[in-house]
Image (tube, rainbow, N blue to C red):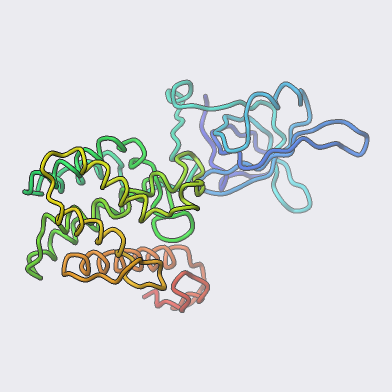
Length: 316
């Protein structure tokens, strides 16, 4: 494949080719009754509408909405908006197209940090847990869910809402927890385990794919209870896991949001639980502020107030 063209570089008259996410696909009829395929394609730089006029039945079977595609098309303009007249299109995969430059991070918003390096950072934190049962608990849960942790966002529309966002969030929180434990004379092992496991249920709350959605389990139960259940199930397989230690870990997971109105089942009632809540709160809001500042395009020292913090932010 020749040079891959990201959507934000499209210009009328160009012939482009590249990898994109098909976010919408419909078979429609022209005024004369002919079939065509109406598409919306996206990558991490933008979104564009497209049309397939020829071989509609054949191309319709080659890919579905929600899948990665490889496409070649001419860029045209319709009513002042760029659109694609697609000449070739088909399903894309790392196995078949990796050697041509395909990577899922090209087509969906992704962490700017290397997932493999972040995973190694998490492993280093786990190694610092001295309590052998807590270490075994975290290690086993992470091992069983490694593939999902690698790509799962931390949320759909709020903080760290991009591919590998959960991984980035857990690593940042874990490093803060390691430093704060000594400052507040807290049980570092318990705090680290709580931080590293408090959101693990998101790998089941959110569907793992190019576009994540809330699963039925997520809608019915929510990630806090899912996390608690995952921890409780694995702890039950570890010989001699202390009952009180497990109860404290469950409490930390279920109270990490901190306030009843924020869907916490209780308020944190011991130091490590309170520290987890405060670290979570800090991490979430610092990331929301960072994203709001990066996205703002106002020619002013202040952003607009239409962000997740609901206030204008100072940019200098």
